[in-house]
Structure formats: C-alpha cells, structure tokens
Length: 113
Image 1: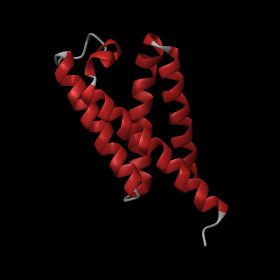
Image 2: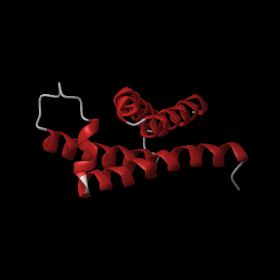
Image 3: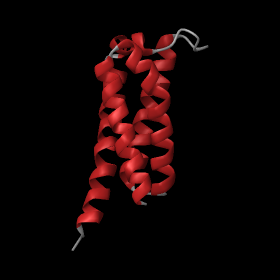
Image 4: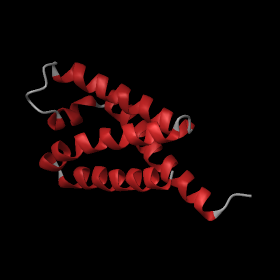
C-alpha cells in the first residue's frame, strides 16, 4: 500500500506529464494558436519551431510519466517550463500562470525526490 507521500509524488509527476502530452498534441493539431508565443528571435520558421516544441512536450511528458530516471526527467521538465514562462506570460498571463504553477509543482516534486 502506498503512503500519502508516495501518492503525492505520483500525482505531482502525473499532472504535469499529462499537461505536457495534451498540450503537445494540441500544438501539433492546432499550431496556429501557439505561433504568438514563439519569440521572433528564434532562428527557425515558426511552423517548424512549433512542431519541434510540440514533439518535445510530448516526449518529455512521456518520460516524466514513465518514472524512468525520475530526478532527471523532473529537472529537465522544470527547466523546460522555466524557459517558457516569460514568453507565455508576456503574451497571455493565464498561460504564463499555468506554466508558473506547473513549474512550482515540478520544483516540489524535485525537492521530494
């Protein structure tokens, strides 16, 4: 039987993983919406960058969900979100807030490991 701490860590891992996978899928299906979040200084065209970003979201989400090398996947996902927060916040504070809260959850998970 799992302890409350184990269940908390599991939820802190599953929630951001599912968020990343679902948003990655959405970014693949409806990339046009997300173009406004891409900084203009990115050297790729927006469509290509968005596909790479969506793929990374999906792959990182699957890795985090798997629990394999959990500390590393959590740390990399945390860094991923922290690099997104300023750009998301500058375009739509609600998306930025979502990413900031997700970052806080990932930091909590990292500290619990």
